[in-house]
Image (cartoon, rainbow, N blue to C red):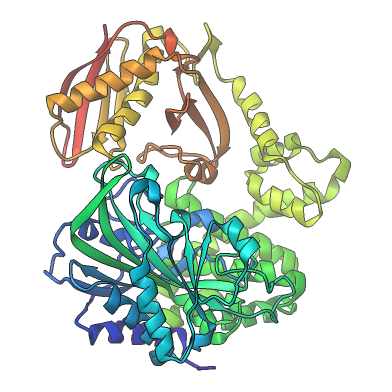
Length: 623
């Protein structure tokens, strides 16, 4: 198999598309600029979205190519298996109203098989089966192109109609090479499947390429599986999205005036395919890191040692890139994600070597990563010092808590371990509940996080005033009108997002018994029609007598659940999430009514004006 390094793959990809008229553009930051709606850049498409939606590219190019740094906090619990990482690079090429399916599929197939040397016999592809309800036809065009491309390699490309994953489990491979799947697998839009798309939303079918590792690497790699089987035999390495349609009504789509191509290919996944090994941590980026961990821990990369070694290797790479961009460990937002990466790494090294101070090892690992990426993303001298300083400080700080927490866990009778014990560790030592959960899991003890959150709620109730069925959030002396208006800010926030778009986010608020003031991100003045729509939604939801409930959870879990956050606020490790029926979900400290029927009167916006660059301010009352 080819001996190309991961850096070679990236370089060849950029050069390949440059030679086909693409402008090579630099990676955007993993901390999005001027976008409070998301913590991280999670895909190669994210920085390109405005151009895919019609805005002209700044340089005027209609063809661009890059390798985008990405981070996905939602995958943190998955890291430890053979393929999940939090940080990764996404190779991408785009056509803004330029070339189409024939060029895109030919080029990516040629790049993978001729330029990189992947065996075409190990490649399988998927296409969109169509959606009769929405008038969207099967992507037979892509099938015809794929069949011709495989024919040039003397490979018969039989097309199989799979449809759903459930059907795939029944049908299996059936000697197929091209597989039709439903919209859930082979359709792209920001909202998901066609039925979920709002009017005016663009979308289109996609065609994915999978690499087949065969059935010999793992006993669970079945003969009867199919490309979208989750057994691990197949690895998706490339996806070409053909954005061709716009939704114009329920069940109605029309062609976009300009068709766009959006391609994404996982750099590390392509490297694993070239390595012909389903363990992504055997590729060159990670191989030296794993060797360093083996040497430090005295353990081999095998059996039960593999998962913690993978966590350390992945998490410290992500941590290095975050610190490079100015993130420091904290109890909120990106800082919380960074803190969690570092602390999980400390715990995994404790499991491997018994030490709670892995500072020296982490510096070695960070240094190796900086050397690997120094010509692309890092200044070796300056960044090694900066990143090491932040790491060492956090490791030593957490090491003291880890020592105390582990002693408590080791000294307690397993029968006495309870959700209250886990919460007391957090309350007394600042010992994160998710870390307690992981340590207990190693001992075969399952911790019910929901019950830990209940313990947190009980603890908070001592400082939360409850009267007349209202959640006071610990704010003594709060008036009834204060509580009404605070609850209404949640309804207003969601109504503004429904009317104006998901870019809207809370930028400040002020409550008095006479009115509410709400600042939010938006660049233009609201029209009278938009103001009326917002008022109508708020009053409608208020009058639906929606139940207001709350639950305590980790900040990371709260954000992952879709809860909105006030992005200038500081949050602790555990936050309270308030839900108003199924309409609104936000991180908040109160106060709130228990049911929206408690709010008397009609909600009315009395003024709407600018409050600074990109921020608008609403004042509203109930009359």
